[in-house]
Length: 348
Image (spheres, rainbow, N blue to C red):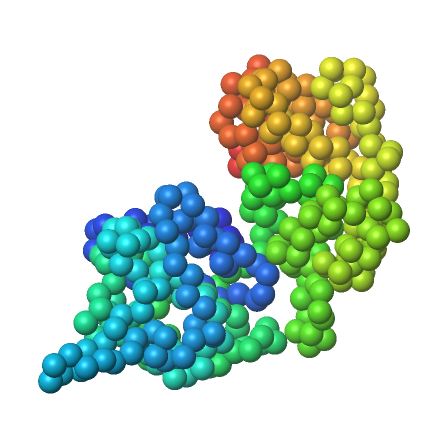
């Protein structure tokens, strides 16, 4: 399932705690596809706490608590990490990460917590959703087979990578436009992991975020840039990205495009992707500065000048994902949409 759809499922599952219809959710997927980040984003969107419990690092007593004598009886001290309405708030997310890396003794201690929302005398507050995530056995991580009794306590979703979803996230989070342009140019490198070779560094949504950081840190140090990019996404992808970045010197003048000057569209396909990403980035900055409509129009005009009209559609599609419905109110939008109506490939 593509990330945008998984996020919608998590949103609805969190909201369902208020209606009494919540089912614990298990997210499956290879390393680096953003499972943990999706859960975190739901918490940020609703401004609720997310308690991240790494079961792989726990002992059974860490979850169950420890016994102590109370008169003639033994009671259990509830771990402070578990949700408490007074300390953490009435709503939130209990996130059991790395659950497939937890030894069987620990996962067994979670059975009652996940299905019955309790452990002994402890009760998970009604407004708290329970999500979990883990790697599959074929992903070369430290994993155990999920026992059937535990698996039967979840609704299961497998997270796939999807370039459009990643691009939308990347623009919203200020990822370097050169990385976005490169992955538009080489979409198969968004995620390229071969568990048979067990590489140390490989392309993934997570590691492309690392390359963004590397470009900010080492962009002015060419003798270090290639090595730092390869350290993030592996030797082959690092070399390709480095060459792509070096070619950005031939990028058209973005300011001249926004001033409606007659700037030719590059013939090189990599530069076409690069100019499209640069224009979307400029539109985002203009929107944040309150000058969006003055920038959207020239971009729409330029999008109509691509000889491959599908490239212009991709540019406007990314623009719409970045800035939203405001794009439709720009006078230039209707003529552009009419000019590409027969090749429209994206929902705008």
